Length: 514
Ligand code: NAD
Image (cartoon, rainbow, N blue to C red; front, side, top):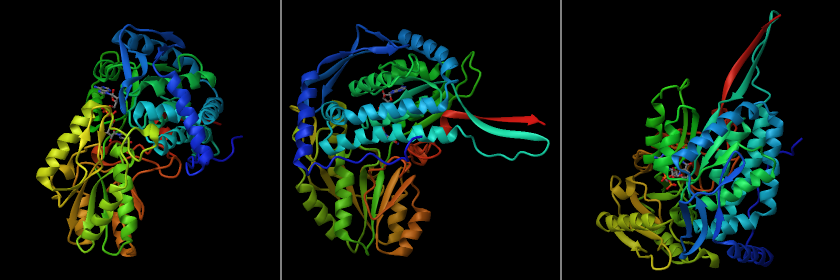
């Protein structure tokens, strides 16, 4: 029997020993950079001519790995294998499926710094962010394994003298898992492991800028004893392989995390019933955010500034939960702004191999997008710190604050996904909540206040999936903070929560007349 779930502790880099261990892993992984990785279909490696080249966003001349790229034909082959494998995998004892996840978690835990080092090189994550990403991947494996063991017991329904009744949860079929690059390990591993532990087979299409860490995870699953064909690894173009599999009549569900635009596209396409399709596809789509920290006039202003700066600039603002709007009561606006600027100026930007506070943004497209929003910001508000970018070696952008931004400005409405935060003044606490709710999104939010009545009001009126008080709005932990948002932030699937696995099952009622 598994011990109770507890989240994987983060590495404390204030200990020199941990620093040395991490440096060792960075050096080791550096020697492995540039390797080739294959597709895996039915347990067999497939090499293609066309490749995805994964580069280090902090050092664009460095290739992290070269990964084979699936075509539609190979995606079709993977679908056939997954469809066939489902017939056997669905009958495996759920407890044994869970044990494979526990074994995979143990393997990753033993190689924790190695995985984090890959995230430093491939995703440009500073050490603590990479370490948290790996810890979260371990957490998902441990947590979903335990959740499956619980779910296998079914939910109680009433029986009576004349009949015995049981409600059980059975898998759906073949699922397409489409993951983002920003939690290149945790979200990819979490979505994949949830789907497979529930008894489904999976076609995994990772993000094109971070396929190497996904390839490493596939190796772990194999080592943990996952049978061939349960998870098939098919990196490829979103628009080619993604569309093909979303449309496929044998696709039973799609588990997607990424942008609002792609999420909507998948949702719309999946709704069309294709010839030969005998079910309605289920879509789990977790999408973008435009997340707000509200600061009240009765609040710890140092805590407010720290929370904003940490949530806005952690991993260069490239979290769906990142604070990109600070809505501050006018009585304390100037003080919080001044404190936030001071903290921001202390942040270092550079190659995360040196354990800087901030690394690069993801790629040239992300760099261009963020810089264009900085230009927009100069029209819409006052640039008070940062604003410069340098893409000569890697995609570096300074942590940037705009002050005096109108509640309806583009900077306050559109997801930038970079190190840019807009400060906006509110007249009252009610006004602050009104501004906080004025976007299409509804993912995370935080309120910094010492006013109990205002906390209660925010609980009712601040319309986001994850609402935090007197802390930042990032850093959800599996099992403690089930994660997912409202409105255009997605289907509120609550990853890392007790009801997440239900999304990958269907309930079957068994009633026997006595
Ligand atoms: P993206 O939408 O560009 O890509 C996500 C995935 O979709 C990638 O694997 C991509 O290749 C694939 N894709 C692209 N076009 C496709 C298509 N036509 N059909 C099928 N798949 C397709 O997102 P991204 O840039 O990788 O990630 C950043 C976004 O993800 C941000 O908007 C962020 O807020 C969001 N995100 C949300 C959450 C959450 O839990 N809500 C978590 C992390 C990231």
